[in-house]
Length: 245
Image (cartoon, rainbow, N blue to C red):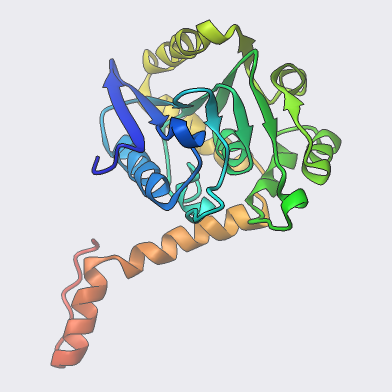
């Protein structure tokens, strides 16, 4: 990758994707967002069968960089980049705002005992809206309390609500998450992909999540070689030769 704000390591069909701005609590800057989006693209196209998403240092991520962050929809797995392979979040330390969006879209999540989550947009006066999908991934009233108050929720409480698969000692976070990933990586890739795809279809989608999915499809046409061919053919008054790329 061109940026060191996101690290991508591959081992035994498991990708470990690490948000790597520890001095800024892994805040989601434009640069980090671009690198994370590329990491999802590389993961989907490569040989890895499952990805672990985590943060360097004492935070998963503090959320959007208020000095300039990217579009949340574009970097959210399954929204900005279509994924047929599962993602497991390894949640360390604080997970705020856009970080919670990333965790909610993971297929599984393991949290360190010291971890906590919050979504403070109501306290700031801004929302991107993609977090609305939380009400389909956590009991409705618990999700609304989290969103409407902007207060913190402990990893233990989030586990009780079914948001985390397990909560483990801080020192065991990566080993426990990797053990879970290994169980997935050992299984039939086509079946795992089929079940993930079917499950994603069943899961209710919030309005902004659906809009991001639609925008991804439309923007792919804008970036295509076929568009350039079509424009060139129009200028040259000839029949275009489209190749589907």
